[in-house]
Length: 306
View 1: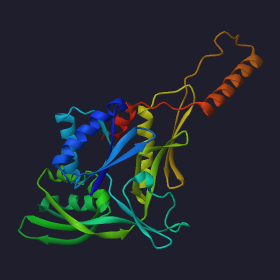
View 2 (view 1 turned 30 degrees about the vertical axis):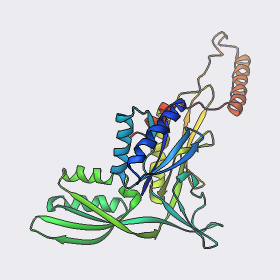
View 3 (view 1 turned 180 degrees about the vertical axis):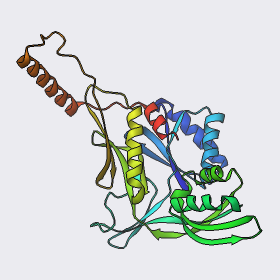
View 4 (view 1 turned 90 degrees about the vertical axis):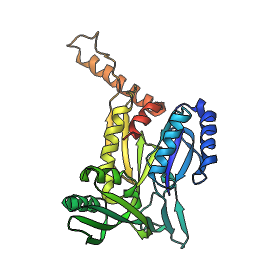
């Protein structure tokens, strides 16, 4: 299954959205439903679907049939944590994934689900298809020519990579001539880690994701750059960080609004100039200590949109 978190754009519409979700679930019992709460986005739900298409259809029905204004997080997959005492636990919410890496005091092993992907495509697109699979951490299982021009390609692929618009990328490089089928394989040990976004050292739980360590730095840089574009400037400095486990992989700083305290000052009065600037600097430090960053829901919508 794949999981997404859903939140109303306005918390006053929570009741209406809950009724809409319950009505659709009545006709689709394959959807799993669990309430959850986010510090950033408020009350919402963790929804489980059979696949990304199932999730997309459900979202379209909410918007078109019920007129819902909703924030949907990118689809995630469950991961397995094997603790040091031998206990196995499946984590469905990335925010609950442990921060410690493999070999930590509590975590013995981390696993992620794999699927066997079968791709049928014309031979002229074979090279690009192999490149796509390899870049998504795929392991080739079989390559077979069943006609002079048609190829069957089989790969073991992490489910997390498959739900990250893999089929859309495959259609793009093959001009729509490829078909894809997949079936569950098994759980495999993997070097995965929780990537989260911090705003002034406070985690934004709604956007946390579990990624492979090889992707953490690149995604972290993308996150902080994109999030900075959608956060409004404050009266104090805002620090945006991406953290993989306990390591900061990227950082951006949003400069504060600045009042011109030197406007009425004579240019030659150096000591007075320094005194005013120091006073402004101290005032900013105090404001930063007590100030909360106000992040509009529209910023989250823009950040989570592809």
